[in-house]
Each structure stands twice: as C-alpha cells, then as structure tokens.
Image (cartoon, rainbow, N blue to C red; front, side, top):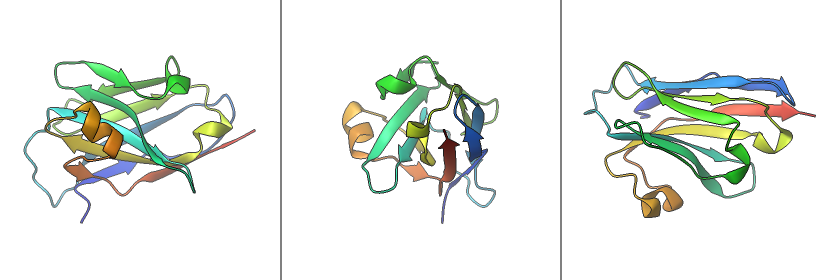
Length: 127
C-alpha cells in the first residue's frame, strides 16, 4: 500500500509548466520525514533521483538539465512536498514518484532507496 500520494501530472506542450504535489495517504500515519524527494523513470530507462529537500530547507538537484527549471519545496503539512516544473521539455516525459526518507544519503538517492513511496504520476511533454 502506497504511503504517499502524488497528483498534478498530465500532458503539456514543450515550454509549459506543471506542479506536482505529494502528501501522505489518508490511511497511513508515518512519522515526519526529515527529507523528501522526487524521482522519475522514463519508460525503458533507469530510475533516477530528480531532487530532494530537507526540513532544514537544503535542496539538492540531481539532474543537470532540470537545474534552473525545477523547484522543490515543502508544504506546511507534514510529509508534503511539491515540484514546480517550468519550461518542460520532451526529455522530461516520465513517471514521477514522490518519496520520503530519514536519511537521504547520496548512496540511498542513487540506489533509489527511500522509506516511503507514492505510486507515481505521469508527465508527458510534447514537442
């Protein structure tokens, strides 16, 4: 059972924007994660970390092509995170997953090891 729920995916043309939202599943009561993040998977390609944010406010972006276009932020409610995506490009087409973790070490991010996950929301960018 997914412990996080994403929303906000959809289809846009290149240059458009979307904001993804993620919050806790109503049936799950996880402790507050000190770190939350977004991952994505393009069909047939590797799963990759997009960005993480800590409750301290520290942000990390793991894909060079999204720097300056994507912004990750925390919501006011616990275990809530957003991903503002601007100037979307066809290469951003993927299923985006929200995740929460207690550590968010670089090793865990690279391996896609997080404590809780959502089921994903698809983003399609047409040229």
